[in-house]
Length: 206
Image 1 (tube, rainbow, N blue to C red):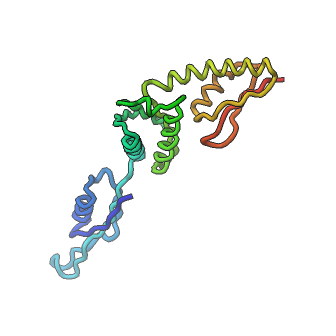
Image 2 (image 1 turned 30 degrees about the horizontal axis):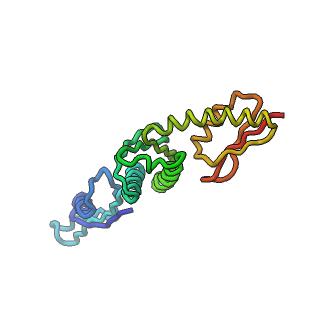
Image 3 (image 1 turned 45 degrees about the vertical axis):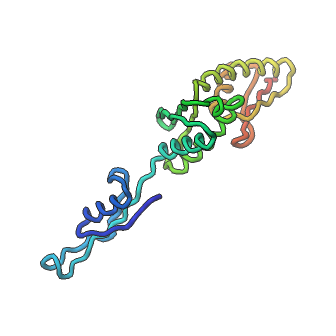
């Protein structure tokens, strides 16, 4: 967090001095007046300069976006990031070359990037933000695959009468499984474990 203490003949002068040093604008900062100053007799005798503390406000979304771009650059690919906001859900849509490298096997690289991005954005946010990372419409294709997987494993659980444990998944993928099986009265689902290794368990209803 960048902040600076500056002084001037007036509060406004002190603020402008601080903004110039921080190379930012007033709308991106928080200003705390430490001393309003005093003009003094004839503007000279007994005068006291105004003192302010100016703090740059950090935009969690911009920090997360910059994090993504930096990480991808180190991975050898240049990307563009589109941001889609919906309440506390923030979707970062990645595009560019070598996107398959960022998705990884079964989306493992994309999921890891998503987890790290969520840590970054919530480090700077005052309220919890849920992050979804997508590339080449992978999430939609993944959801369709998960729905088919949920049905197949539910049938396996019913047939064998045994519990089936799925691989660790991020929360929104677990939600797809839960939703896909919520109307199946022959099985029940629940999440177990701790992030980032939390996973779904499908059990037959006896």
